[in-house]
Length: 246
Length: 248
Image 1 (tube, each protein chain N blue to C red):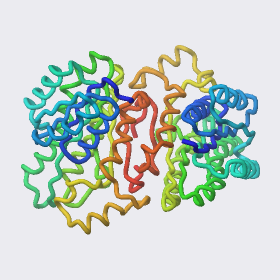
Image 2 (cartoon, chains in turn purple, green):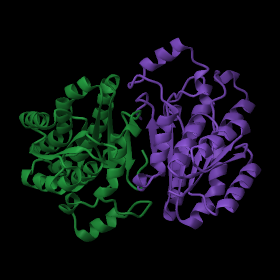
Image 3 (cartoon, chains in turn brown, blue):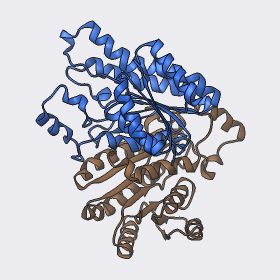
Image 4 (cartoon, helix red, strand yellow):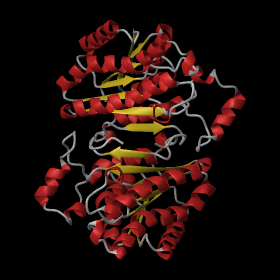
């Protein structure tokens, strides 16, 4: 594929794995992330492996920055075939009575509004092309909920409903919109909160008996970018070892 | 080739979706067992497979009969010695309003569509457990979520498959065996032609957000994905392949 993929949150964890996977299959990857140094590292790794990659710094909660990023990518490449909205995070683990309005807004903005803003900018490009794939990241918490993560769960459920609606809007243009919902995944940011004992306990609840790997999730993103999934839209693919079966 | 040397049983593989899956698996290097009630037609699919995969086997089977399923797995073991993938596709679609539905029709649909899943899965589980690997993929339907007039037994059987898949996924997870379902929208095969005119069907096929008439071939990619190593962390899920016609 000589496609162009824009990946928000592509500098770390799952986003990094998705960037590496897509680049390895010949897709030109643009890593859009707040963390410049980490994004640069991914870019260099892709280039070293013979792939094509760029890094752009962006705060996904800032409409102006996203507009500039998408405009720049279009100017340089003349197309955007794939948009993967992966930037996100749960940030806080606390009861509702302790959660401030500012914290609630932060979680909703990064996890839900960020996807909206990127989709709003990229959709017209894909509509003109009459093709495109948008894949938004949700979470098992988006369907099952989680105590002490009300904002994150609400945002991730929002991503699923947002994506279904956008799939209906963009279907007449041949643009597919889907969601990947990972379960607990072995990324430094998630795993720093888990002691080895807690992780072992947690893994007892997972039918496949292990924590997910970023590569497991990257394979699902790749599938949803590939011709094999041409007739799947508005769907959520749960990659979670069976911990949630909605 | 993603399925090189894997042994795959595809039930209902003599025609339609099952045939497309069997041919697709052959292209990916699998040794394919074409299992179907219609033995002669199963053999015809094996003849189509041979140029690409080299090794394929036709077996006549009634998935709703315990002894027949047992014999299927015995024949597969004699020929190939293992089973890596089971695709539960065999199914029937009888049409009747509930008020007029005969008990024997209810039993036939449930026994074939859902009971067949149970019997075939049960027969391969000990082998997969011993191997500590395996893939079971069952063909459900959009109708499992949506229902269908004159198809209450079919809808119940296909929804039952989803419940069955989730439970079996929990049972088999510790042995690294994944169990998933695919829920296709209406597909352009011989089956829906038995109950409606060509004109009505053609219209119905395109009544979806993407405006595309699904073919059996369109389901092969998602099945191959779930059968491959790429999907080793996906289990207990029902993947909708329906051009956006429902989004459960």
